Image (cartoon, rainbow, N blue to C red; front, side, top):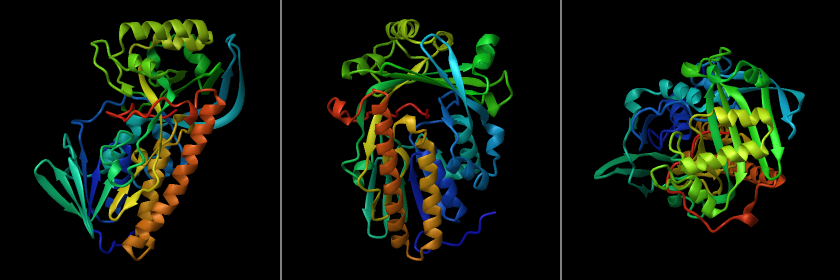
Length: 398
């Protein structure tokens, strides 16, 4: 059990955004005995068929300590990294990791938070700071809180209140993604990827895949899901084509599962047949509902204005090659929990938190850009003009 102490001057906390970044913060601050309220603009629980995530230390620690969940029970182990050549042959190196799904993390966090604290289908329309707190506006309703945390993701509508310069930019390539029930894979294909984190680095492209938990967090072989990600360069016009759905609706920076236009799906399959090793091509062909997201770079120069904070992807949008989006959000929450416990003055605690998390976010941001450049996928110098994010980017990590 965590030893917690009351936090002077902060009793009420409002969290804008109820995805992973907001939930990490809400669960941790509720553990301090604070009155936490989360407002999430989407209605209902999302399904958990989104992308997979590499389980990193801060996420595993958070699930264990704050949620009472054994992360090993809701993640899939891999023992080796597998590297494919264009001819389909592969070699292996020993590297033990665990893979988890977005849904498994979300469910663990959401189940820990009292239902009366979480309000979905509620859009925060404005935040008004005052010297020792913030007014949270939901239409005509106003909720005063001592501390407001902006956690509404890469497409944050409220980021500019704290960091007007932090809007993300398109990095010049997309991630096609797919999730396949293991039961739908031919046994011989499933065997190729068993216990493996698999990669293919081609000409200005990268493909990777691994198993993640299936329905209800099942990690039993045969009931898991195969998660794959394929990074492909695309100019601004190509991005618009990829993220315009089969009914002609433009989705901006992401395309959810089940909406891909037939022409784009055909282009994806043709590209797979001509440029991927045979086992990876077959994964793409077996995917019923591929989806896509633009790769973004977002760098905030600050994470705090008075009693208003930025956290998770609302602060730094790091490329998924880092496998650090969920890790960064968990670390933000752990650091804030610790600072509020250890530093007597709330303002001093928030200042210390911001200094620590700005340094970490900047380092991850730069690391992601370097990884993308190393793969030939693009960097800031190749960016098309700034494109504001009109909606949520697809969930998940590499």
